[in-house]
Length: 382
Image (cartoon, rainbow, N blue to C red; front, side, top):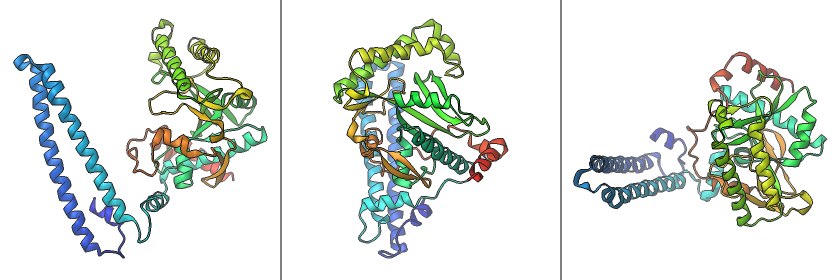
C-alpha cells in the first residue's frame, strides 16, 4: 500500500522520508482501528448468537436496543475513518498552489488506460459509437451519451479504465425510427432482451457480425408534460405495479428459468410494458413531444433504486453539446451534471467499483480467438 501511495506523492514540498513517516503513523492507526473494529464485531457476533439461542427470553430487546446501535456505530466509525484517509491522500497528492478539486481532476485524467482484451473491447465500442453517431446524423435522430460513458467523457475523455459497456439515452420516438432504419441494414442490428432479474427491456445496438462483442446500451426516455417530483413518483409506482403483476402471472414462469429472454418479441412479457405505457399516458405522466416540458425515465428501463431523479427539464438536455470520447465527437446533454448527480453524486470521489464492476463481456475471451481477431480487423478498417 505504501509503495502505491508514494508514487503519487509530490517530492518538492516535503521529503519522501518525512512523508513516509507520516504514512507509517497513519498505517499504524489504521491497523489499530481495524483491530478494535474486529474486537467489536466479535463481541457483536457473540451477542447475536446469544439472542439467536433465546437466552433470557429477550431476543427482540437485545437485537433492537443493543445490536442495531452497535452496528450503526461501527458503520459510522468506518465511514468517518474512510473520509479522513481520503482527505490525507488528496492533500498530499495535490501540487503546490493546486486546489483539491483540480488535483482530483488531474488524478483521473492521468489514470492509465485499460490494457489487453478490455482495451481492445473499448476501442471496438468506440468505433461502433462513431458509426452510430454518423447513422443518427444522417437520419436526423437524437441521442446522448449517458451514465458511465458520460463520466468517462468528462473525466477521462474516453472510457473509464475499468469499464466495458457503453450507455446512451434516446427518446422513444427516435428509437422507433432507428429500429425501422436498422431493420433493413446489413451491418447493424438492434436487439431486445427481457431481463427478469430487474424486469426491464434491455435494448442494444450492435454489429450483425456475432464475432464482434461490442454493443451500445440504449436507455429509453419519454416526453413529459410536467417535471414535478409527484409525477415522477407516480411513474415509478406504475412500474412497481407492473412488476407485481408480472410476478403473479403463471404464463411468465418460463421467464424465471430463462431470465435473459431474447429472440423474437414475446407477447406475454411485452404486453405488460405496453399496458404500463398506456396507463402512464392516460395518467398524463407522459405525452407527445409538442406538449412536453421535460423528459421522463421510461418504464422499460430498470429501477435499481440508484436512479434518484426520473424527470428532467428539456433545457437540461437540449440543445445537446459535442464532447470528446475516444477521439470521437459525440452528443452529450447541455447540462451533464444534473444527469450524473442524480445517480452518482460527485464523480470525482474515489470510485467504489474498480474491482466490482460487472463484466458485460468475458474479458478472457477477448485475449485471443474469434472476438480478438474480429475487433482487431474492425479497428484496422479505419
